[in-house]
Image (cartoon, rainbow, N blue to C red; front, side):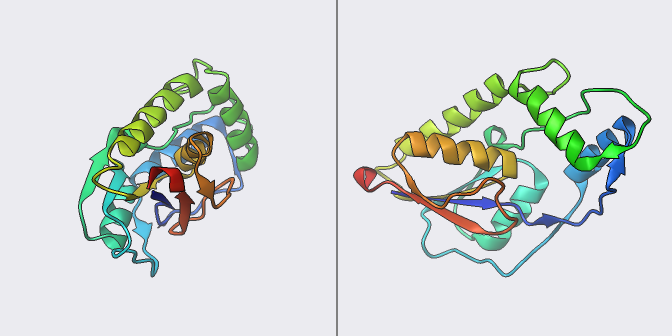
Length: 182
């Protein structure tokens, strides 16, 4: 069985290097609504089915790269973040991503969804996909950087081997395989 992981195309949005908590939250909200910039990736032929996040940037990507059966699901949406602290002081963007990731990891109340809930929904969708193995051996998943990182870890624990990544690149295919499920 093969599972292809694709992060949505690059979002057409410029980001400031430094942001207050308010501008960080505004940027994150705008990121959710901004269109993507398609690339040349088209991978129709080798996949039996595609599961896709219900977020518009992922749907646009999936419809561009794959022209078969696409199952849209909320279980593949991105891990969303909000500023854990309230400050007018502009802080580096990477500070915000780091501290908010820690808050997510620790299930902090400031985050829309903590790690426990995220991993539960991602495990549910991976289990659902793996139960389809008799009918569909090669599955494509179009999702988001944080979700794909966690899905890759889940697949590794289930015996899959393949590409390693920390942050999936936009519009790039990563393939995970498990020969015992073929």
